[in-house]
Image (cartoon, rainbow, N blue to C red):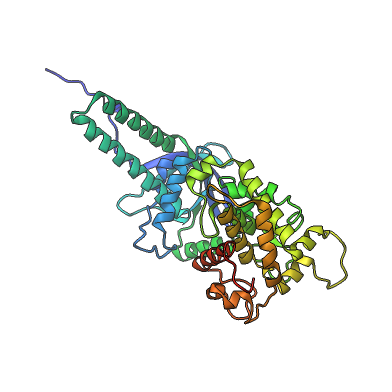
Length: 421
């Protein structure tokens, strides 16, 4: 009996992938710009080892990489910038046009730790995809093993649904693409300088900017409405994280988000994933504005700021009221406002929340004690709050344990005030 084998139907050994790419020049080097499936990243780029530092790159953080994989899984509308890589000479480019600007780019696979490409920027994304791919693969294998055993019809149906979900997640990694810029640079010394140049020229996003644009967190998403309150309107720095004596604003955008979290979850807490899903923006905005109303009415310095026009012309060298507050009052410190937000939350929590007017009256009793730097005879130094203030401080100690402790001390004064209050 004769057998006819068609060699054209047999898979040939493969050790590379080919993509459509654009060839340009940058810094005297050829650069190939292409887009690759997410699942291809750990195939064509070396997967970094968190336990071993690449001499040409920084150490990777496995947790950070894992979080990128989780981000891809949970956010259907994910976004990520292009990765940057260096080609030592292993890639080949077959031009398709007369100018040689468009063509087929063949990229060797990274096999056994050996790769033609070295990652300049994007190590955590490569490792994150690799971890996510392994997670999905292991989960599918686990389900297949369980299905092979005798299980009930209901459980089998449940397992099949879980498997379909996992297969769908793997297909997303195959069908969704990310940008990749490959710089042709055979000199390893110059490639190290490329990494330094990229790091030096990248401007990190400040927490203030993140607070303005990160819509996944309710404290950030509600920011534009919260800062419309009379106390904050025109007095929030949209870019800076630190309120120096020279900054004319009362707070930074990050600090407003911190105060929002304190009102919702406590001064030392975070808004849980469950709360993020169940809280409406309107509820959060209302609660935070209630707090801002209370402190604006309770503290004379904040009342004066509310009535001041932030856009009024000032004499040369004249301080804004926010700048003056930072020099003379604890209320000028972000930490103290977070503490008051935490106290507000404690008093409003539970089945019998304290009325807003009663909290206002309670805070009014604190008003005479807000001068800074604090004196040794102040209420902050002669009570249990002493542990949370340094001598001559203009703000409480900002460690989380101190903030939480101080919130508890002040909240307890509502029912049993010290003699000095």
